[in-house]
Image (cartoon, rainbow, N blue to C red; front, side, top):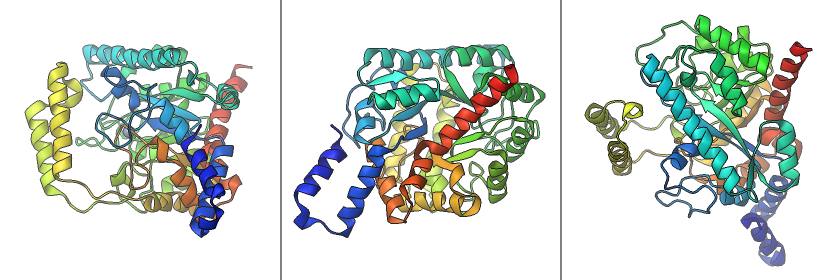
Amino acid sequence: MKRYFLFFLLLTALPVFQCGENKLRNQAMMIHERIWTVDTHCDTPMLMERGSFDVGRRHPSGERGSGKVDFPRMADGGLDAQFFAVFVGQGKRTPEGHSRAKSYADTLINQVKAACMRYPELAELASSPEDALRLHEAGKRAIFLGMENGYPLGKDLNLVDYFYKRGIRYITLSHNGNNEICDSSTDNAGPEWNGLSPFGVKVVRRMNELGMIIDVSHISDQAFYDVLKHSQAPVMASHSCCRAFCDHPRNLSDEMLIALKENGGVIQICFVSSFIKTPPPNPRLENALKKLEEKYGNYYEIDDPELKENYRNEYYAARRKYPVQRASVEDLVDHIDHVVDLIGIDHVGIGTDFDGGGGVEGCDDVSELPNITLELVKRGYSEEAIEKIWGGNFMRVFRQVIDKSENRKS
Ligand SMILES: [Zn+2]
């Protein structure tokens, strides 16, 4: 039984202690229980691939090595569907680099599929809106696959079809660096294609034809506008925030949000603290991380698992030594409010980026997701509006992407 449901029972058994806050909490938990909820981005497959993380087991929240998502904690947090990102960090754009990226993507896909097979009573791999609804009724978690970074495609358009057949339902066109498809918003070298490359235009068209969602998180502003120009279907930013509150190139400006509305798409608000609220300068941390990169090189190009682990340990040690002030649930919901104020209730959702840097004060792992609903209730959002934010808007986009592809086939 879900933990928060037990909490609810406890509260109703002790009405004498109920105060306004508890009433709101009860209301939020009931809504959260009733609606269909989806998180469009977590990087948990990275943990699974290391071999020591068992996604079917409940890990103690907040402990090192516990990660932020597992199937039992998804149930605790009332999360019905989760997109597991097949994330491949940007490496060398050579035939060897591309082939290595493809094979790593395959490994991650295999890991997620194997985990679903190991725990059929808890979760099942899903690839369509119908799957998600069926699993919701069965009380099981729906696990979708998305690909973060189109790098594994290299320059081969056939691989869009290949990964679609393997179950991938969205592709984030780039990550932190430019690739063969488009420019990234955060490549130190600046733009290379001035948006989408000619190959990128073909990728967008093929994704439209297949019914794959185009994910515009991470890509440059010009690439974003190019995608909107070429895509026949609504798009999604699977994990991004608003530049109005935090002027980071990973976030969407108001102008981009207005264009997203015209496209019919959706922005899934990300839980990475430094995208929610600009942190105070932390030069000692920046210096330590820079030194680490000088010592080890590009993390994503390290082959030796031991070296990789050393890098990770030193990285987390530096972050513990020079902690970053984190954003709160209230700060995060400010971004939802902003999108709603600017472009309406139909274009916003949730994309946590748990296990990829996501986590705020008050919602640090999947089991704490009802705290987002509580904050929405406190701010006066109706159940209908909360349902749209938690999954209705994403589902509309997903269906439209599929419908457009089928229309074209007929
Ligand atoms: Zn990301």
